[in-house]
Image (tube, rainbow, N blue to C red; front, side, top):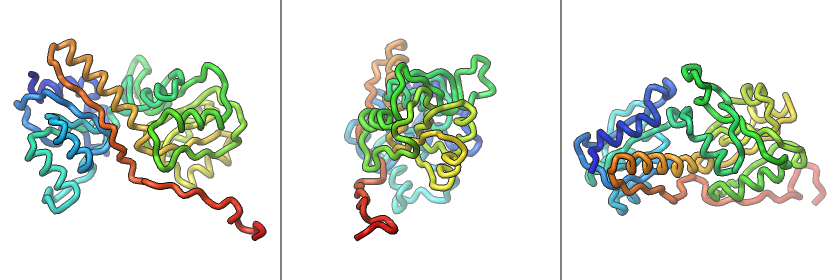
Length: 284
């Protein structure tokens, strides 16, 4: 069986920590470098529910996309939400490793997995990594459809193929407009509107779109916006990452058992549709 340090080296060959954003917190959070690894679990969020799943599974390593500690902390007391996570991991000899914006910028990365889930063809990065001479790494992806779809049809495809959440897919724009070029970005994407417009995309699929940036983006152009749940846009990466580690394990003869959590950790649990007659000025 490989040691944790060997598995981490393999993961960091896929997602080098130096390619993460300066504000990010990636890498190994806890774990004995000399400990053996036989079973690995991939998930989006390092929350207690996922850690309990790792314990039940008998995993030696949990790999998540989101960091446990994004900013500094002064306590890991088990009385705190994150401290309890740390205590559970250490008590059960489970290591935690994080690949966040370094996985966003990878080739293939989070947005490639999102595009793959929607069965749309990646053409290039939305925001190329200037350190990549081949121009394949970077944030987001610009994609092309083999056959044009209306905005309505594209939203329906996203709703069908991404993991189900209470939010579903919100849409801004003309539902019958044709889409040939789509920009996608797993996770929060409303900081990328200038890049999306520069790419000439007909639609932008991402998550966490806020009122003012979305309103301004719509005022600037006919760009259609498709807003999915944050967790749903990043979960496909877990399957991609697991397959990448599986390949490395097979190549090295490690025999790792690699799993992807199916637990929904999107925080929203219920959606209540608005009453269409309850609008300002509408007759009672």
